[in-house]
Picture 1 (tube, one colour):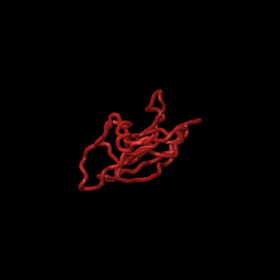
Picture 2 (spheres, helix red, strand yellow; picture 1 turned 60 degrees about the horizontal axis):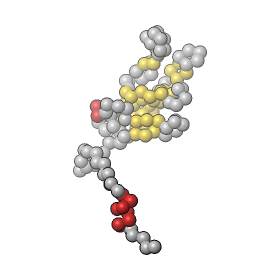
Picture 3 (cartoon, rainbow, N blue to C red; picture 1 turned 90 degrees about the vertical axis):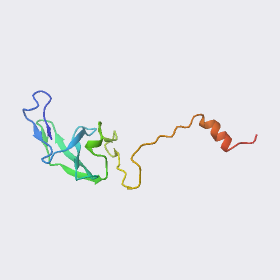
Picture 4 (spheres, rainbow, N blue to C red; picture 1 turned 60 degrees about the vertical axis):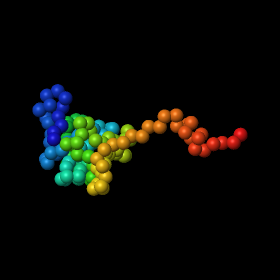
Length: 125
């Protein structure tokens, strides 16, 4: 994975990850580039590369932040994680590791839930 200037990206480009990576995401202050690497089925590591842009583009060595059973590239069409605006937390999609669990997503929608609540917990006036 590489970063480079917007104009002529091949000139002055710098390698961020010698072992590859996917889903790059700039940190809120644009001084860090986050990305994921795969450690095999069901194992993802989130990496961080410090980046300086002034006066020239400098990319420091990437460091692992954390790893776990998170969603991988083959299963997503959009980035499976995000960073909080302050850069202090991540939102990750986690893999289901229970062998007996079904691989589906269910959303339960309750219409008129206030009426349902009144039925379940009547109040006396």
